Length: 490
Image 1 (tube, rainbow, N blue to C red):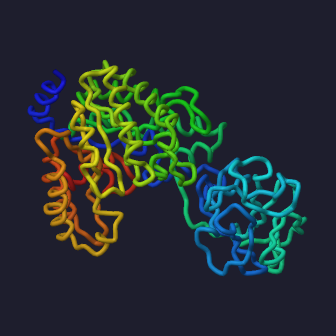
Image 2 (image 1 turned 180 degrees about the vertical axis):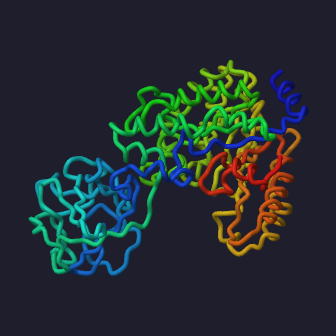
Image 3 (image 1 turned 30 degrees about the horizontal axis):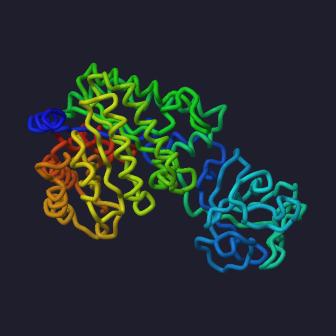
């Protein structure tokens, strides 16, 4: 019965033309950088990658062997072992995670002054204050839990026993030059950055203004018929999600469903951020770049519970079109085994509440086999495979001309889409794409042609496509801007 129902719906030409409401209920700093403007020490957020050079020795601090032993100050150049990832406690207090994921701390559970990276857990003796020079914020001292400052006494001896004399001379072993080599700006960073007193107000303001009812009116008037809405796992714990997350995103999603009904727009709920992070990126709300989703059965079950919660809430809403079980799991960390287990359980969770909603399975990024979920999906009625096509993020696109980008769409992307489009398998969905290229100086006409090429090819996807995103400070990434300025016509 189900298979006949979905076959009939597919044959009636779904032609989903959707836009992603990216950067709304799951924060991505590059989409709306101003969201982070009010955070004190906003360059020192969770996941910031910091390298520290002793000004006296001229050498970098290093977690010897990547962690598990002492901290030294003997490296002339910095790489992974010399890079520390911050866990922010407040605007001046942090924990430092090393390459092998241990935390920097004081030896002997804080009873010694020797600085080591041996603990897999962070407590008081793994907590430090970063004191910046008011005249040069790259110059720092680091105060340990014993009240003393770290100092590089020798290349092989880093201790926490300096009183810190208040001056910032080049011969002071307690002074370090800090260099930020990586940052993250996701939901964890924005909420933990503002802290529990300020974050609720900031996020409520963002949720109530970034996407409004008029946006759904714009969507329906401009040839679009659906939205893909990224959500985070914490939405299922609203109104009191685990810290540092704040309540309110569920109410915003309720509003979206109401507006969607008002303008006959369909909704695809997309679990963009799964517990533990399925890809280690800021857009899955990783705290520090770690990817820990799917490592345990408990974690998978927690994720299924989120899908169950969302489907139960919206199953009877006529706007619900589909539920996407997870977004962009990254291979090899997100294994085929854990995803097959999760996709089967997640599909059943959706079906417990809805016989009509499509269930979208995202392909893994970093996997060479675009059909690896076909054995599972082919036996699941109403299943959809989601692929994301960007002519970005790879060296192969960096020297392409406009015409080569367009040719790549017509030749390569067309072949990739044809490969996964079968008469008896899952439907196909290009769930993210954008009319942006890795080149400077392209004309409006160039972008119009590039956009049209993608619309022509991705129009062959049997479920449909979704542009990333509706709004973005980067013009080509904003479908609203592209439509209003005549770059894209649907």
